Each structure stands twice: as structure tokens, then as C-alpha cells.
Image (cartoon, rainbow, N blue to C red; front, side, top):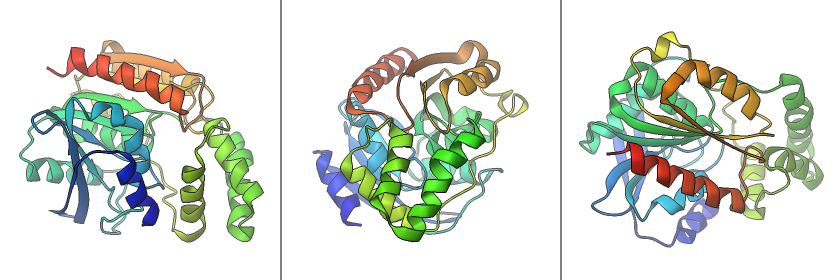
Length: 277
């Protein structure tokens, strides 16, 4: 967990940590940011460590009190219980965390797999979401399976067999348009080789599931995201969210570059300013 701790130090802020009991097991939660700020839950991306994707949104720490749980069953300090992304499980897990902190309703930010978890909450407990930011989210639509096999699965299989830096670089470049930080590359390399990966994405959300969801939603997409490209996301999101949807797309991959993160944080701040009253 050396990389986990190093990432926390890089945030340069006071961080409280605790283990919260849920019906699925103990969840390690980081809390930070503005002490008297409105609560903001940030749910981590899949098959990575919480501080990695949390660091993408550090521009929000000055305005909000941020709660960032290590997703149960994923790399981190939470229990290893794997939950299904196809039923109510993740929604119940989030409501347990909200209840622990006596939060009735708040804003959510969900990158990648975390976006899929927010959508599970929207499907089962929509009243818990004041507004939502989904960054390159799972749970809406997928990109080309053929492309994913060629650019991710085959190099991943070869990397797991050989540990070759060449294959790891190929994966990282495909995920980030060749902009992935060296520390992130090292972390995903260790996770890919030594951790049992979560291979099942949260289910694709349906209109019926969101019939009671009425909260403003910002989606940030990458035009060349290998997993959830803009074109595939927008077609489905426009139908799912209708007038609730705000949309931003950048010429980036699944992992945003530092320059893209500056723009994304500005977009999120503006969105929350207008919709998180």
C-alpha cells in the first residue's frame, strides 16, 4: 500500500480515515476538504486505488467536504467482499455509508466504475442524489469490444504472463492517449499482475430504472476513450437523462491528462455551483 499512502500525501491536505461498518463488511473511508462544506461523495474508479482517481478531483477540496470510500471488493483497505454491479448491492452499500454520516442527500462524483455505482444508486435510491457528475462512466454504453480486445485484453494477457514493460506501456497508452503518469502506470501494473481483477462492469442502465431519477447530471467524456467513448455514451445518455443532462467532451482517453483535469475540475465546480444548492 506504499503507493496508496504516497498518493494521499500528494493531496497536501488534512485527511481523516475510518472504517465504516456496512451490511457487506467494513469500508475504509477518507474524509477531507472544507470542514463545514456541503458533503460530496467521490466514488473511485475500478481496478485501481482510491487516491489515484480521487486526485483527479482535488480542485474540489477547497469548496466541499469530501467523502471518498475505498470501493468494497476493489484494491484498497476495505473488505474484499465482491458486490454485483447488476443488482441493488452497490446502492445499499452507498446508503449504509450515507446513513453512517447522517447524510440524507448529497452530490456525487463517479469516475469510470464509480460512475456505474452512482447509476445503481440512481436506479434504486434516486432521492439520495442531489446532483451527479459522471466522468467516463461505466453503466451507460460500451465502446468497440473488438478494439478493447486488441488494445487492452491481448496486451494485458501478455503482460500478466511476462511482466514486460512494453506490454504495460501499450495498455497505459491505450487507456490514456499516452499521457498516463509513471506512478499510475506502476500501480496499474502491480494490480494487473497480482490482484484478482473485477471483470464485470456495472450493468447498462435502462430508462425504466431511471424513471424516478430527476437530478441534474453532468457527464464528462473522452472522445477516444477505449472503454466508453463519447459517441457511444452520448447516444444513450441523451435518452436516459433528457433535459437533466449536461455534457462535456474532450480529446482524451479514459485516463485524463493533467491539462484536461484542470478543465474538468472547472466544469465540475461550475456545475455544482449552479445545481448543488
